[in-house]
Image 1: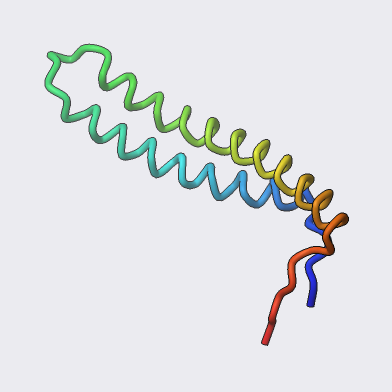
Image 2: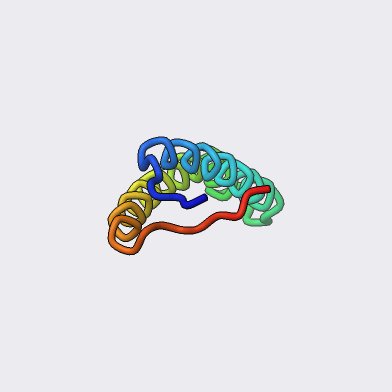
Amino acid sequence: MVLHRIGPLSAAKVVAVLYAIFGLIMGAFLSVAALFRADGGGIAPLWGVAAVVFFPVLYGVGGFVVTLITAWLYNVVAGAVGGVELDVR
């Protein structure tokens, strides 16, 4: 079996959701770390809350754009060299 083409938009949507989930996890870790920062109640807790929103959006959009470009490039290269051979059992 040879993989000749990847649907750029469908691949980008899947990766965007996966990266948004990863960004939510990273944002949660940063949020918890900000809660334990001893700076006398400054901006650290606010930064932590913002991270839970900011990181999933940033990772999701970034993953979507990079995957869209990468899938398109794969299709161009696969058209020239014949694709990737897959051994599926």
